Length: 501
Image (cartoon, rainbow, N blue to C red; front, side):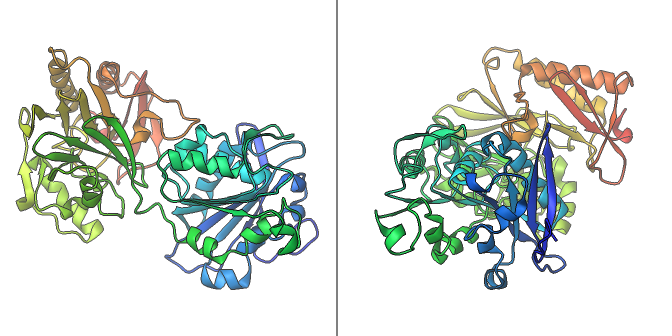
């Protein structure tokens, strides 16, 4: 029962973050053990604001589109339908909504790669805003008769979007700037889609209903384009066909260097020389990372990995050989056991401190060993492009199997610091193995880039941990031995007692 009305398979959730809260209805599908399911976030319009969730649940077509027996039979999914308070709009609640999606994925069998968002009118604007601020979280979206800030929207260049609007919508104009009475400002769907496409989005679709169609065909007000949109099974099937699992997001760093990121926020880099290109790490993504890399260059592509963990080597088997320190070969059986892969030492081209991978044209990738996270962890230095690819050398987990003693890691960092003080090494960009190492994954995170400063802070942190002069808080993720985390200025380390030596 919700406010006195029975709603099948629906429970009430209270969403909270930073002093803000929302009531929400959660539809739970029939589930099977071991399976995960998509989640649809539905954002209502201004007329359903308040403190009565029935207003949201009875709005049709809306969230109910995804709760029908017919839809659930083909596409079982969770549906989260929050309610915006009176006199408010969705924009101030976007951080809370994003957090709630992740919480649902942690509490229920939700597929983290298939989080979908759709909304109408004010909820369409909320959908656009969520895409703008959290593009890495959303698999696909269907904003309907909404409005968006067009320049910020370019951040969603990798998110599949299908938008809908009626040409004669008198409430939210289909084009031009709209100053909402609810506080948000943006442009209508036609201009929003133009911005998205010009940013590079090639999975951006738009349906604009001709003037009169809403009234004459769908027998509804011209603002009510959701009536038509939620009857468009092609669009609904299109959205449910999208997943972040095999999606790679690509950024241009500088001429000759590309950044790629998978669904797990694992970072990969493609470096071009004159004769060949080098892919650094493979991530966990389900797509063919080699084909993705080869689509960015006309040069033959080779692979080098910073260390032999699953989130850096998983797709290495699409290459015949790859560069890696053979000190990490003892980690391969563990990787094989967890994935069914068959990585062996014969596929490894051994690299050691001081080795160079020559890409031609003066682009030389220097190897520097920074053992600690694993026995064979390395960083790659590219002086031609002024980059250092650090893997997990400074976003540091030392509670993992085969992690080296902290004193050994400190000695390796000191050796690297000495190298970086030489001419030609003092203006490098530090490019890490995961965006989250720097806290730059989401807008509300405090961004602390990897840097020369972090090296000094990490050395100090090593001493403080070894001397037990710094607080060590319990850390939730461990591998059989209790883990702790300590921080000092820009540096942090997760460790276990057995490496505190």
